[in-house]
Length: 287
Image (cartoon, rainbow, N blue to C red; front, side, top):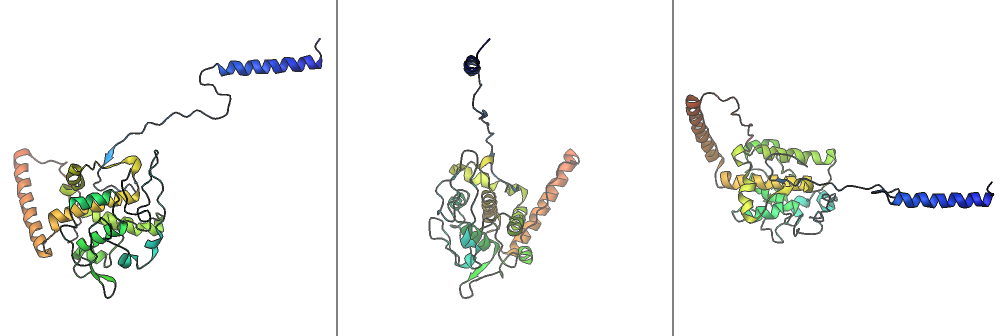
């Protein structure tokens, strides 16, 4: 027989022996912290045509307006609401062209404002959201009136003016992504994207790749980045296809282009036969 003291000593020794044995088992931990296997992410470059996947970023314009430059390893940090943009007068009084981004709120767009270097600053977040909006507004035909502190839509492309008599926020400057706040920005950005013909959908990749920009990675995406890329893509399309022409000239160019395409398609069908897969999505032009 064993005394109570002996039994206690025996049980303690047995428990220490078992614990030591478990430590020799591979991958066994005596703590309750689970082992976590690393996740290997697939890095894929995105150049944006018309997707809405709503930020590693270099040298943002300011800590206030471009507050998303800290990208953790697992993805972008959530964007914080940008309070100045909630002021109704921000679009006409907010600072533009004060830094390295070449822009004037007054007058029509210039070729210098539409350079590839400018487009690169947009996608690299080296311009403010307001500056991106302002440049697109000018290209759409809105003109700033200093006396009334308002945007005049007189010169806006007719079809766009029907839907947007006042310039819409194409970026989401408030950076508040609830449905009730962000929906108008999302819809206006999508309308801008739909106005780009298929042949110009990859303009961003074509023009910025020589400058070293390879697109975003999926894990970096935010609504702000996506919409900036789409605005930059539209600006390149505008520069290459619309800049410097009147609406009447653009309509005539469109007519001649359609006639040439119809003739080329008829010739192709005659030689190769009908192709059921030869379909292009409709384009809702701004003019």
